[in-house]
Length: 68
Length: 277
Image (cartoon, rainbow over all chains, first blue to last red; front, side, top):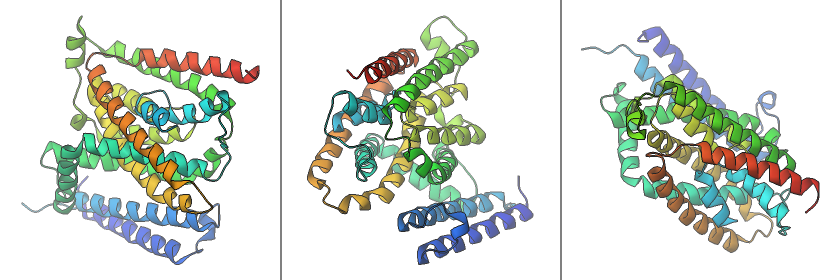
């Protein structure tokens, strides 16, 4: 599915995941989305958000229409 | 424990289930509710993942190169790049489900009854995967039957995501990660040997990722690091030997013997646990 709209959407999603990862790293934020307040849980969520951000940017690059 | 985990991790018989059941049956002085139990298991898994990295070292170099090349280009041009993206696609659902479900699943760890019951379920799944596979096979010899199916690089992205998500089932003691991923690969149309290769490649980043997160817990509260590290080395050696064996076995072998083993082992364990033997 090649589309600038999809690519931009995935790019925005990547940025959101990065912001979420940073918020998790700085500690104890976003309690709504966590089942535990333990630091280890936040570290796991931060790493997961980082991985999802990378995946989103890769997917955005794939979705971007290529010029010949 | 290291040898047990390493030997059983890559065989489709649930290493985690064995790690929960066997110490109980043998009355080993090993507290499964201990906070260091899960990090210890993860350290053993890292031994396994290291063995897989060594086994596929040349392939992993190509996969990592392929990942960066395809990611920056936004296109896949060869099988290594496709395989890298397939592994990413398969790893994400496992990571998401693992992080979200981890705490709930950990509660099951302390129950050898649950592990034994799920071992039976695992066996039934293995037999089911093979039953589905046989319906799609053509030819009379095993070689002819396998030739009709694909290499790991040809699996679809949707199938890779589903197979990856199946990895999350392995957080349940008794359900085998390699079993469900090999079985998923078979249903997706891979040859047995290729399904095993895809399963082993898919397991490596997941296991390593889980290890990186959990290992710091080992350094808290008087955990015997030396013993644990030695167990991890033994686990790696056993896993390397197991992987070599399985890749050779799956050139013509099937999942059925492991399915029957899991059903038998689960039922015997349930009986032994029930009667306190």
